[in-house]
Length: 174
Ligand SMILES: Cc1cc2nc3c(=O)[nH]c(=O)nc-3n(C[C@H](O)[C@H](O)[C@H](O)COP(=O)(O)O)c2cc1C
Image (cartoon, rainbow, N blue to C red):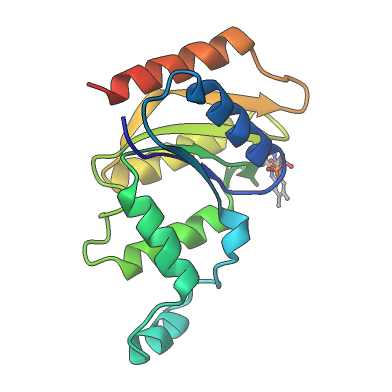
């Protein structure tokens, strides 16, 4: 299995969760597992006007191109993200908007890709999981039925965490 990408949408507990996942999967990995911390890229806010400006200059900013390349080159994704206001956080929506506009086929970075959704959220994060699954389905991804949720109250069930990751990882080799 090559190029498993773990995305952390935010920099605190979701980034911690991302590295915890990497640490666990590194134990039996035969390929490259990397963590992409989206906040580090500080992408501009998507607006059609700004996109038009970039197109007139015949180029998107380097940060968008870099995130695009990383996403396209990944074979599978584990995406860790908080729930915001019962839904998807703006950094995720913004990233997907840019990537869908910076690729020739708007679904290129997501289509047919196996994705596991994870969340470290204040509450139970289930609305985010539900909403993000709908969006990723629309983008053609193959979203796992399983998910990992961390909350302030619940530090997470270790056995469940390991079982879900092992199952997801093993499916990638099929
Ligand atoms: C604008 C905003 C809205 C939020 N809405 C929710 C929510 O609807 N449900 C929830 O469980 N947590 C909500 N939270 C809490 C975040 O999910 C929580 O702080 C999470 O740990 C943030 O991830 P991070 O630690 O990686 O930054 C919200 C936080 C912010 C800033």
